[in-house]
Image 1 (spheres, one colour):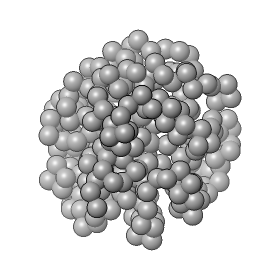
Image 2 (tube, helix red, strand yellow; image 1 turned 180 degrees about the vertical axis):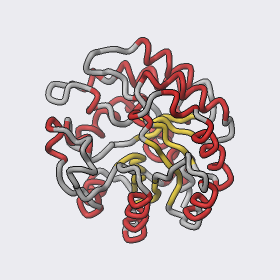
Image 3 (cartoon, helix red, strand yellow; image 1 turned 90 degrees about the horizontal axis):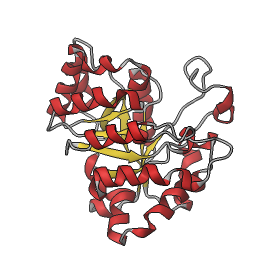
Length: 279
């Protein structure tokens, strides 16, 4: 099947809810303090004419990676996995070679938003990023705006490594802050090996009182910076449910991209993700 024929949700999660493991789910997010599994997502994707998804790690262990791999083996609509591996490990080459045996694992991610910016520039981490290329693994960059400068330095060191920014680098939408974030986005987009997921926006807005137009200026910046060929749709389900249903989350971007051609919409809603993750 050609890449462009797939419609893909390029960013979502599965878990068996455990209070300690998922301690990041605070009281405001109590609605997602439960299990979310493929059987829950499959009908939602079907109802919204989406062929498949990329399942992304939510816990920083290889147990998590193996959990997602097992789900993908049982559910064909999970087209790829972004797992976790300790990129700073001295045996990183061995671990990547192990996971390269699976066609379902497309790349890896670390929750860099929980680290100081310098974390991603330390030699051990850079060594891990350098090792990804041998196995054609991608890397998802999960950061806040304060990390954009360091992230730009990171991606510039590896011009042939495919990177994708998750959740448009989590701008402070609820506070209406845009200028510093926009400056950082425009800078990192100058690196042609970097893509961006238009995802995770509703949970950066006002959970209870957001409106679709809150997100338009941020999408304008991302689309202008990255162009139509380096952006992709992601729902961030089930996390999005803290602020919006799957349909409402999808509706925000569907309405925005109505101004684009059918072919351009096809790139955003699956073509680019299929190419990036080699689905």
